[in-house]
Image (cartoon, rainbow, N blue to C red):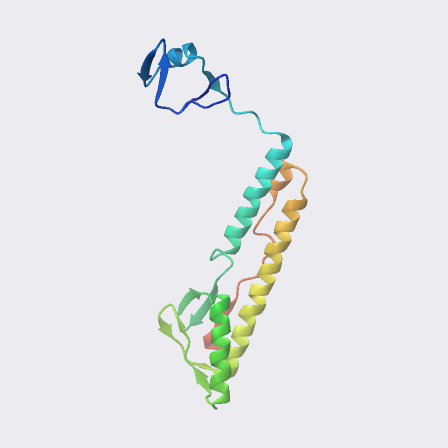
Length: 181
């Protein structure tokens, strides 16, 4: 849709104009021109603006990738069955508290639930696996922040567009409960 602007720099509101003392609704291009409007043409962005937009877009892609299952998931293997799961930072903190409480009370097993499936794990194994998830998440965070800084330091749109946002992330975790974790 075309945009129209008058000689005072005011954009046409898209409803009507007054031409020769008459209010005209849905005016034609010719009527808008006769009423003193000109077609507004968006100015070409400067190279700096193009670079800033490219950086903003690439940073948004990095954040989206960082928050996706491509990063935020691990695999649990049980017999012939496997499933993808994830534990958010809040869930990790709660899970750690539960493990500490169970251990303090002398329990030997915990029963976490992933995707509606309850598992039975020895407390020590659960602590080790939780620690692995935390270290994995920390490493992913470092990669994400490093990527954002790298993009911000780039000097050309071509550099930004060519940047591989998936590069450098650690290998996703696999917990094979058939092998004890």
